[in-house]
Amino acid sequence: MEKYNLDQITDNIRVIEGFPTPDISFKDITTLIKDKDLYKQTVDMMCDALDFTPDIIAGPEARGFLFGTAMAYKLGAGFVPIRKPGKLPGETVQASYALEYGTDTVEMHKDAINKGDKVLLCDDLIATGGTILACAKMIEELGGEVCGIMALIELEDLPGRKMIEDAGYKLYTFVKYAH
Ligand code: AMP
Image (cartoon, rainbow, N blue to C red):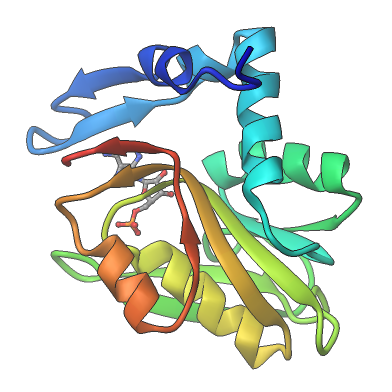
């Protein structure tokens, strides 16, 4: 028997058209991770796909925490949260990235990474790749080595994969949608 049932994992991601804006087809993973067997299967599948041992898993809020912390626990890695500005109490570094209109900023603690740490970046979904590439920039600025970027879901019509691979990173994804 297969260890993971990717069809069943896919079937339990709820797609909500027009949320939060009319042009977005929102991929809702809450319906997946409330199922105890499927949450475990998903995290196990993500851990087993890795071909390196991370010292640190870093993930952007909020859904990056849901997969990243579970993976870190299973792999014996540390977890580093990446947050929207103004949420972290210590000294931080920031990175901004372009949105369709305007920019967004992510932030992490300056002392979160040791020089030479092997880091896996983890989120629920890659769309344009802007969020995760901003995260990668901060980790490298702090001396970490981004050894891979992982997300459960990839939106294949959007430029995320190309942006990430052109920047020289390995991208791992599992469930694919067009957009
Ligand atoms: P991006 O920076 O464009 O790659 O967007 C990825 C981030 O936005 C991730 O943290 C996702 O959780 C969120 N996101 C973007 N598009 C969607 C979508 N269609 N459904 C759910 N989350 C999304």
